[in-house]
Length: 200
Image 1: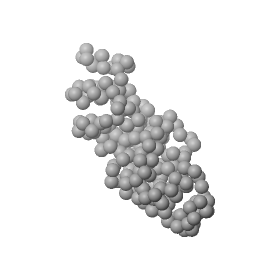
Image 2: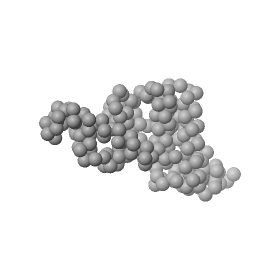
Image 3: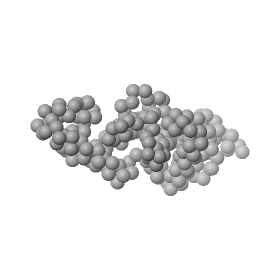
Image 4: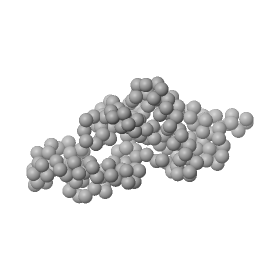
């Protein structure tokens, strides 16, 4: 009991609680969940607008958290909340994929994750995952063939039109469009191959 009371002290960092849990102190996880549950649940609910679905995804989030910690695969250098938010974010995406509609931060573009980066109304929770998502995407882009990478960078990061890209690269608009399409297809394959966005 004394140990649990100490663990509930707000001065104890997430990293210490994670370490304690990994070492077998089960109450440490409860402290972590209680510390962050409102923020994580609010983020999930703001996407699905359904209490039951939000609670299911919240539970699934921490099932993945527990599995990852118990497998010893957690290596987020103490950044527990952003890591959990990324897991919740991906479970929200999975939910909408299964239901053939995307969450409100998505658009009708070819590669939905870019809408997370371009959304001008990012709330606090989405800001937390934004940096991780952007970092992951840049790693994926680096694996693309040079011609596809060039078109994608011009389109997504320089906001150039396909006419401008055509003029800049010396290829036809159709070729530029084709390279962009293959870039997006290959990005999906790379993400699936390396499991970059979500740690199982």
